[in-house]
Structure formats: C-alpha cells, structure tokens
Image 1: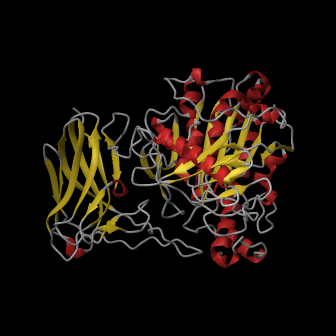
Image 2: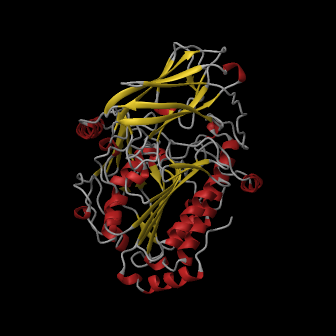
Length: 588
C-alpha cells in the first residue's frame, strides 16, 4: 500500500520540530480497532496471527494487563472522548440515534483544539451523524470516515469527508490509514491529535485476498473457549483483517518516524469491545455485547519515549474513562483548559503508573452499562445482577460465587444499582435530529434515523446501519423523521432512491409543518447489489447505489417537527427503495 509521504520541505520542518520536542506539548496518535478482542494480538500469546507492529507499541512502551472498555462500540467511544461513564453521556445503544453523544458533553478533541492542537479523525465515528453531532462539531478540524456503526462494503466505499460524501479508494482500512498518514505529515510541526478508528475486524468479513490466504494457510491451532461455537471461516477472516490492520498500524508508526516526531508522540492502541465472534481470546469468558472479561477487557498498548520505559507492565485495573484525564495530564492540560464548562469526570489520570507501575492507586469501582444491563468491578470482584466472580483467584470466571457469598454479592449489586440510578437520571433518547446548521453543507438523514410505519415497509437488514428502506408496498405506509430545524427557511429536498421500471410514475411527497414538496419518479434506477468478496456469511445489507430524486423546495419553520415521506400515487406493485433524505438550506 502506498503511503502519503512528506515532501523534502516538510522533512526539514519535521527535523526542526524534532529538535524542539523536549519543549513542545506531545502529539497524540490513538489507534482503536473495531470488534477486536484482548486475544487478537500475538503479544498476548495468539499464535494464529502475527501483529508485530501493534506488539512493538507495547514492547517499546507499556502494556496494561487489566484495561476495561464497554461491551459495545459507541459507549466505549463516548467514554474515551469524555472521560465519563457512557450512561451519563446519552449513549445508550448503537443505532437509531441511541449512539449520539449529548451535545453538552465536552470532548478530548475540543479541549486539545482549544489549546492549539490540530485535530483529525479518520475512520469510524459512531457518536452521531448530523452536525453538531458530527466529528467536525465535536472538536475535529478534519474528518474522513463514516458516522454509523458499520459499513456495508469495504472496497471503494462511500466516505464522509468533512460532511461531504465522496468515493473512497481501495480497501477501507488502507484508505483510512493513507489519510491519517497524510495528516501526520502535514501537521509535523505539531502539536496534533490523530484519532484513527479502524473499521476492522467488524463484519462484513471482507479483506484483501492475500491476507485471507496467508492466515488460512497458516491454520487455526488455538480455538475459542467454547470451540463448539466457533466458525472457522469467521475466525480466519477476522484474523486476516487484524493482520491487515497491523500492517496499517505499521504504516502509521512509520509516518510518525518520517515526520521526525517519534520522541514527542504518544501512541495508543486499544479496542472498543470484545471480539465479535467466538475465537481464541486467552480463555476469557464471553465476547462482544457481554460484560464478562472476554467482552470488556481490551489491550492497551502505549508508547511515549519521553516518559515510558520500554517493557513497562501496568497491572492495576484502568478503563476507557481514564484516557482523557491521562492524556490531558501528559499534555500539561486540565479540565480548566476546556473551551466551555465541562462536567465532572468519572476517570482519573493513570500517568503516575506510566512512570512507576507500583505507584499509589487507590481502589475504586469500575462501572459498565448499556441499555438495561450493567456490571461492576471493584478490587478482586466482578458482579452483575446474577453473578459474582473473584477475578484474582478465578480470572477466567469458572466459579460463580453469588450463592456462596450472598452478602458480598448483594452489597456490590446495591452499589451498582445506586450508580446506575444516579448516572442515568435525566437521560433520554427522546432527541430529535438536527437540521439546517450553517456549518453543514447539507443535512443527511439516512433511513436508519427514520421511523417506518406499515405492514411490509422494513429495513434491508436487521442492522439499520448502512441499510435502506425496502418492501414499500402501499401508499398507506410512511417514513417519518423527528427533526429540530436550527434556522427557518426554504430547504431543497433530495431523496436517494432505487426503483425498477414498474415504479415509474409513482409520486413521492415530503410533508412538513408548513408545506410540502413532491416529485414524480420519471426514471427507473435498479442497479445490482455491490457484492465485494465476503469470506463468511453476512447479516448486513450489501451496498447499493441510489439515484437522486429532486423533490423541490420545502419551507421549514425553526424548531422541532415531524417530516413525513409518503407516496401519493403508486404506479406498480412496489414503491421505490429509499436510502436517505438530504436537506440543504436555500441561500437567501
């Protein structure tokens, strides 16, 4: 893979930056994998794959034996961005708007940006799509990636570049890396924050053929904790995706060296939850979506040559909520440097442990929750509503002690419930989607953000992410969007649709509070699904092109309202498939 390289002029600037490194605030490069497990690195003993570049971060810096994240991706990302338990931040799920980070939360990139850092996010966002939930509204100068939970295709994928949809190039993980490397080269004078959120090994199981064939030829010798649940085609594909990710991590590490800022750059690697399939994970119980060790224990590798001695091992339990205060601490910043009043943190800086792993670290509880499920880790104990484990004596959670130590279990559960009641107080998922901010070229409302009404109208997949509305068979069925319009005005409305010839002549209307806009489908657009190679069966939608249908202009007042998409005329047995609604304020 070609890497974006600095020019000769940039190289000289990088040299100057390197000479000043001891006096400058450190750069930060944070790498996060999507659905990788604790066991998906060779440093942790997995001989099914090779991850030399990720391993090198730990060998040249520190590794953490007990680093905890949430059991699902959006909550983890919310916590690392805010230093707060995700339950407090409004992130209570992973789609249908439940992944959005409340707008009154102050994020790490916002604080860094306010203090002179160039900030760039590359890859998966998953904390809101429309501005100001969009990365460009949360402290990132640059964004190249996608905002929903997962993408339907990993080759030449449609991408969001600072709010504008463009065509990606090549394999998605490689593409993300190229843009991140370019950012590092451009910002070599620093300071900069480069947030690289890889899309893999999340399904669909697509990966360059050479990566898949290499892992397949090596063979799978280490099996899942529950081997009867493992599907080898998924394991091979996921590990091939990890080896590809590792190679891309190597490209980013090389870009840091090329920029001359190695000594003054903090590099971190972690994952957002446990593995997405049953595969070898060091014997840990559970996987993605579960609160057991296998679902929430993540690698944390951290390199910072100025502070961390190579080969440092930190055994104290830390969590995603600790990343923001730690990084601020290492950068010589604090919450007092935030651009607006921040909320109290749940995390605390573990910077002292980087210098001395045996430094004082007062015991505390680590709470994790999403939806109606939650768990607590305190000292040696793990507890949820039904179970109790001694993680020191039984790290693989083989012996449930809830009935043997009922008093301990009851006390921990009471503490957990009290935390959840306090943390979730006042939180709501009743939040409209923002429309019409001047910072947005256009507001895109994908159908995953709509409510579908009717007997047959449905998403193209059980996962609304990257799906489209299909099986629209009656004019009695509708799609509605709950929106909050920032500025009153006339808005150009465009639908992205696909339709066979029999639907030509159908009329689609968008209705608002004070008016409507409609158009007749005059052209069929019925392209085939984009079938890039999957190495294991998928549950996601396949990618499908959609054509624009200009509905005209609709007048929208400011404030909260419902937009309804309906058909006023049906020409065939079905109505068009719909991917998204786009609204752009017409210049006055």
